[in-house]
Length: 294
Image (cartoon, rainbow, N blue to C red; front, side, top):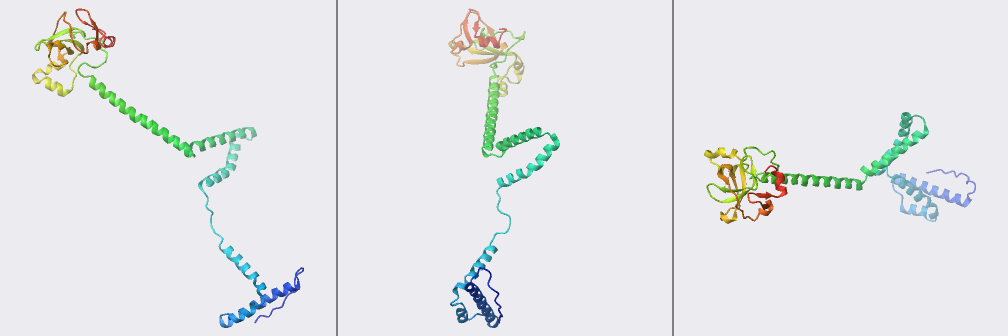
């Protein structure tokens, strides 16, 4: 059993309020004594003690709820975003940056201000260029554009090389034949007749030796005629009037002979020649650039 000696009521507190407080403590003491004996508080006793003193129990739940709310407060580091961490790092680096600026550039305040402004401008440019999603998107677009141009450029170059290789066969190459070797007997524009087959035609190009795919050369020249590959070869537009069937021919020098006063009829004549002077055809300007000495 508790012995309670009530203190005098504080200044400004009415005796009625002090009586309520003493009554609440007395009820709590009786309840705790009964709990110590039986382990439980009889409902009747608890009801009798608390009936008529409803107003005195108000401070209890308020105190308990305050303790619970304090226990439920979260403990640990708060959630911080990456952007906030970056800003904190920048702010923390401001003081060391000022120190190093003063050490490197002296104590002149104007010079320090100028250097600080440069650093701020650099940082602003850096953040816009590397810490912005739009900037990275622009960099990616530029890289894709350069990659696309490189890929299609390489593809175009390879295509042009293949086309040039194809057109370098059968005296179709556009490289300039200068100087003209002395052993080249005939010229572009001259009319010829084939010694064996008898058809006529006009020379539109020549090579110092046979330039053709290896398969064509092996088929054209068996082992007994391999030496002919190293002799001059001529591209011929065959005269349509002969009815030979082939529009062009690529033949060695030893198989043709020159003829005068014979005109050749071929659908591509105007592409190569501008006229006929009675002895040979006059080359177009583009063809004359390739064969300047003919």
